[in-house]
Length: 374
View 1: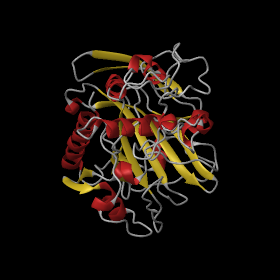
View 2: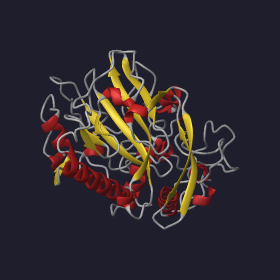
View 3: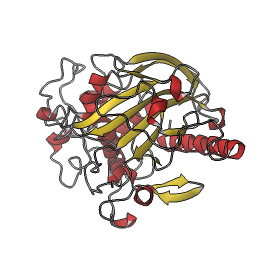
C-alpha cells in the first residue's frame, strides 16, 4: 500500500470522525472526558490509558488541549498498521529544535503513538480497529516506555490496560485491493522497546526529528507546517529557521529520486539499529539518512560488496549485503522479503512482508551499476 495513500486515508478518517464528534457533542460531548494531560508520577505509570488524559476521545484519536498531532515523512512499517502520533510537553516548558538528530524534549514530555488497522482501507469512513497506544515519557533518568492494549472492538481508553509482557492480537482487515488480510499482530514487551530506543539513560527518540516533521498537515481544516504548529502550541526554546531552510526527508513512495526514497525507507526501518548510535553499530553497516548520502557515503558502510561481520546464519547462502545490480544475490533483499523469525529484518515489529518497501529496495539495488563484488 502506498504510504502517501495510507496517510491520506488515516487523516481523512480522523477529520471525518472529529467533525462528527464536534457536530454532535460540542466541546467535550458531555462525556466527562478529561480535558488536559495528567502525567503519572515517575516510576508509577497509570494502569489505564484514560488516566493519562491524552485524548478527549480515544475512539476518534482526538487529542486534548496542547497535545499536537503529527505525522512522519518516512514511517516504520508495522504490519500495515495505521498510526496516530502526538506530542505533549508540560506547561511552561519548551521543545529544543535541532536540524539533525532527535529534538531535545524536556523532562515530563510525552510522545504518543497509537497503532490501528482499517476496517476497509478502500473506505476510511468505515473506521478502524484500535490495537495499542505506546507512550514514551521523559523522566529524569531517561525515556520510559509504557504500552496500553485496547480490548478487541473496544476503543474506550478506560479499558486499554498497561501491559509489560506484550500481547498477540488476531486481526483481519480489507486492504486497498479488496483482499481480506489476516495477521497475528504482536505488541512488543517493554524490554523490547529498548532494542530500538536504547536503554536508559541513553534512550532516544526516532521520529521526532526535523527531517521527518518538516511538511504540512491538516489542523482544524487548514494546512499548516507541522513544525510551525509545534511552535505555536508548545513553543521552541529558540525559533527554528523558515520551513524552506529546514531539512526534509522525501516520501519513500513519492516522486523524489530513487536513491533518496530508498535512503528514507532504510532510515526509518533499519537505522534505529544500523547507525553509528544504534544497537549494532559494531557491524559498521549504516542506513541512517546522514551516512547513506551518496555524495559522502563509503560504499562498504551501506553494505555494497560488504561481507557481513555477523548475521547469525541468516545470510540465505549469499555472500554480500548488497550486490549492485543484483537484488537476488543481496542478503538485504532476502531478509526484508522473509517472514521467517531467524531471518526477518527488522526482527521486531513485523510478521508480514512489506511488499511495497521490498519492491522499492529491489528497484534501488537493480538500478546500481552492476558489480560482481570480486
